[in-house]
Image (cartoon, rainbow, N blue to C red):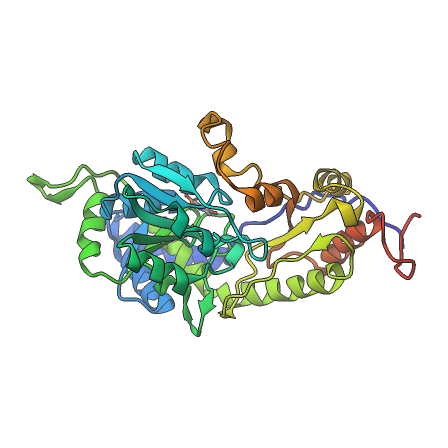
Length: 386
Ligand SMILES: *Cc1c(COP(=O)(O)O)cnc(C)c1O
């Protein structure tokens, strides 16, 4: 076996696009109406499709996922402290901090990297108003346990569901847990509307509040009833969302095939640890393919493997490293937080390229590179170049 550097770089993901013609057909009506944003016809159509998709009566569309999360926090009128995870994209932590809330960081589980529900209750104080958990990489949190903790202590429960579009749990969309779930439709996500986001919730009264907050708090031409912002989804985004929704199943099927190749190959390599979700996921989305590099059995560290892959033009991501709470902007405020598993994981995690249009031969080659760099591979393994 001989491994060559790829002629063009392979990134961790590639934005999904529908056929050019289908998008052009979809946006044509905008030229008839001159209606570009503010709850237009395509916005309406996309919202209805998503209600169906999420199996929920209440879906609010937003310009992006981060502002959707911001709106959720504002609409729930949270105060004081919020228990959350540091093993996420910075958006989750920034959204709390920018709303003058104090994030209280809880450790994660070593199996699927979601918040450790067994450690949540010990962090609750009289100041706690909510739990903000993340279904990281597409793995559902322990939703029932978190719901019962929230109920017992009268806390709101928010899910950052940016990674779980299309995931079903117990035969039902994962969107239907907690008080509210935020989905991101950013270009790099498993499903995109260029930029975009949605909030899914059960309480019908939330809808009006969210609609107010996302449009400057304007109740009518003469009444401004909330100090709101602008987080509206426009018609071009909605059109992209509608087109990509049609191709979503085939996107997931392609990802599943690639994930199967990765799993079959990588589970045989000492020191490459694959996540194990104990959630009753009835439909997965293969949004990311994280591996944990245990240097004591693999022989080299995550950082060295990252560089080796880059030598072949394969660009994995150290996602999530650093922990959000250890980011420079937080000035060491959270260095004392007990986050043993989260810190261990952040040092060793690597997400590998996965997207529908990725060639399976490239996935095989990535597995070959990872296998070739294992310093303790069993004799029976084929070790190229050694
Ligand atoms: C992408 C992402 C966000 C933010 O969504 P945007 O649509 O990019 O604003 C928030 N949380 C997590 C976990 C994400 O991955």
